[in-house]
Structures are given as structure tokens and as C-alpha cells.
Length: 116
Image (cartoon, rainbow, N blue to C red):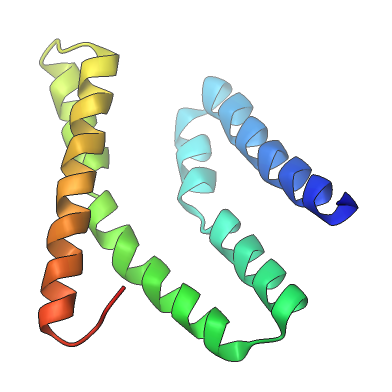
């Protein structure tokens, strides 16, 4: 139980740090947010807890493929906001776009023999 609390605390701390830095220095916050910190921590925790290289390989490959369809959200959302569309509607559209692209990516990769 203590291990789960430590993992939650570290993850939450990273999110709070990025949020606080972004308030003062938005581009530095963006740089930190773009680092795969949570993915790296996840891989460390998976390996520490399981010592299963195949699980880690599957996780890393899946993360790569799922990052790609999430990237357009970071262009669509600010574009919509620049057009005067509200933050929440822009965020919702970005999330919806990401979900659609996840489904497309999953179907496309399945046709290529890779099941995520």
C-alpha cells in the first residue's frame, strides 16, 4: 500500500510542478510537460514490480503508437481558442479528436497485424 501512495505522490508532484512552472514560464512548462516523465516512471515501476521485459516492451511500443494520435489535439485546441472558441469547448473537441484518432490508429495497426 505504501508503494502505491509513493507512486501517486510522485505523479501528482510532477503535475503540480508543471502547472506551477507553466503559470510563470509557459514555454518551459510546455517543455517539461512534453518530456515523457510519466511514461519513464511507469516503465521503471513496471520493471521494478514485475521484472518482465516483455511487459515493458509492450508498454513502450504501445505508448509510442498512442502518442501519435494525441498530438493533433495540441494544434487543434489552441487554433480553436484563437478563433474565439471557449477553452472547454476547444478542450472537448481536442479530446474527441484524440479518441477518434485512437480508434483509427488501433484499426489501422490491427490491419497491419499489430494489436494494441
